[in-house]
Length: 304
Image (cartoon, rainbow, N blue to C red; front, side, top):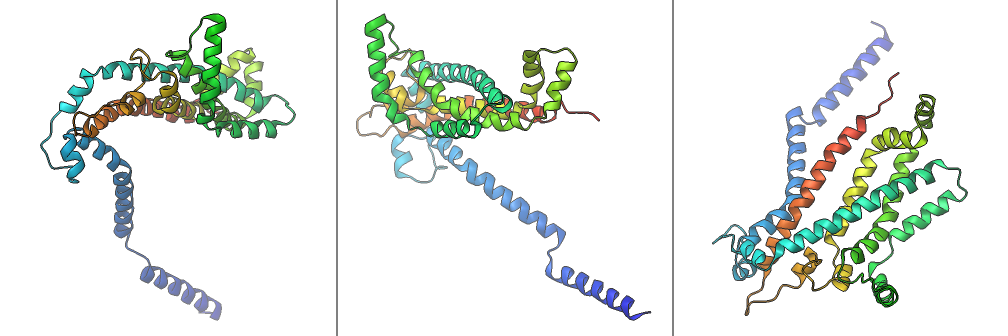
């Protein structure tokens, strides 16, 4: 055996020995990964577990006893909030969130597609301004919007206070910039050759956009829809400013934020019960869109 061969063999043996001596067994790596995943899941789901368990306890025990698994447990908190017409607030939140999403996503899709495809000058500046607009603080909108609504009612007789439109208009304005910014990224990543092929096949620009581009951008559309829906459902400041009392338009955050104390008892149980109920539609909406996002990743794939 030559010197080079002996040196190569010795190097391989030494490397293998070091790898075997310093590495972990395969089962140990799998156990560590499972433990890490379990830790992340528990970390993320524990607030929801605490919220649900607290909703089943009375206000006194929920505040004085930190053990969330110690009873007594009952559904009295859920019964009490429905006695206060919680179902109307839940309906209003879903209606406002749905209207915001239905208006925001089509407009954002068209605007983002135009920015991504048209030969616009200053495209980077437009995207930068869009991102800056998404960071605009909602609290700065309350005084001017309130005055605009009052002036509009004086001039036309149309009242946007205590109405769905009075909340949907600013919600769309606040969620539209971020949705455009997200969708521009997805539209820019779609090859232009696909659009040209669709036009060669006889499709109109609108058909290319609806049947080809939008399905390919389904992950971005779904992400933008989730952001808009969740924001409109959870927003408190504008809803409290423009529709604070009327149960016909009052949303869940305002309803929960205006719970009244019963004697000396803190209504933490009722607050958690309302939070649990309003979380259910959000979870269902996210799960439904998650399926669409995964389907959109493989839809319209190019076959060679």
